[in-house]
Length: 363
Image 1: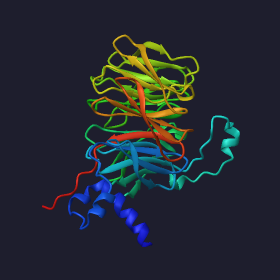
Image 2 (image 1 turned 90 degrees about the vertical axis):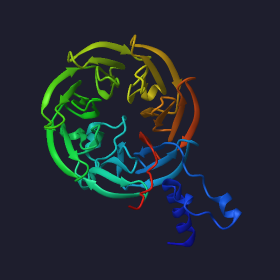
Image 3 (image 1 turned 135 degrees about the horizontal axis):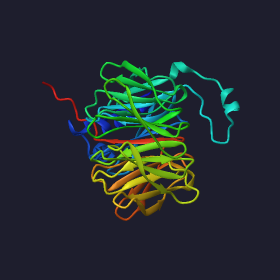
């Protein structure tokens, strides 16, 4: 490694781990050149085509690091303490909407790349790749971080992992072409969307046993719980709607039509439960739903074909991954204005937020 490469690597490492606080540089010139340590949340963006993660410091809304992964990456989550990032890797080909299933089937497949990568944030390295079933796409962590639930799109199944050991606990059948995964706030239910079966499947989080199904609109992609766990909001890409599911009743109780031309994708519920945000894909907006009335109360234009969404714990900023425009839109949720546009890698897919990893103190 050249001295210049070593310097750049150490600078970004210190930006992530706060090591620059430990010793003041001997010269004022060096202090002026040192980057500020992130004081807010970090946003991790999975870039499907460039096969890496962009790390954004949300206190300045700019990229401070890029972590290479070497495989197609989509779903992304972060441990509660911010030390580990989990990313869904796939060796299946990326087939655009314009490509036929027959042509897609001719593309090379490398199943050895399938898995859930566990990434050490401070070291910017993949610690290990855990078995995540075939073609993992989205996944969710249990509230206590002890289980990880993965959708396996091409196998009509869901995989349950123990992230502490990397052990595959169970593989269970769910709806056809599963994608979205969400765990109830109390951790007692896991829901998985079935894109082709047009339903969501409820699983027992411990055993993976199928408990029930609820029919929703065509091609459900993502879903989000209200904070009290009473309702689910499920996006339907082809149906152009959001289905509202009463969890206790196990049935759909409302259908919310999105604007004409919408292809609803990512769903995020505000921490206080007073708003539901929906990325509309090719329509290029994020729509805002009031769950008290189940009506659209706002809209904001973002980048091209928004997909993944993430919201800060205070609910004040929303991050939208915009695939074809290779950027992330930062939305002020009070004014519903885009306050920053951040260039990232190629085809950003998902976003996850977490505090920066705290330094490990000696005992």
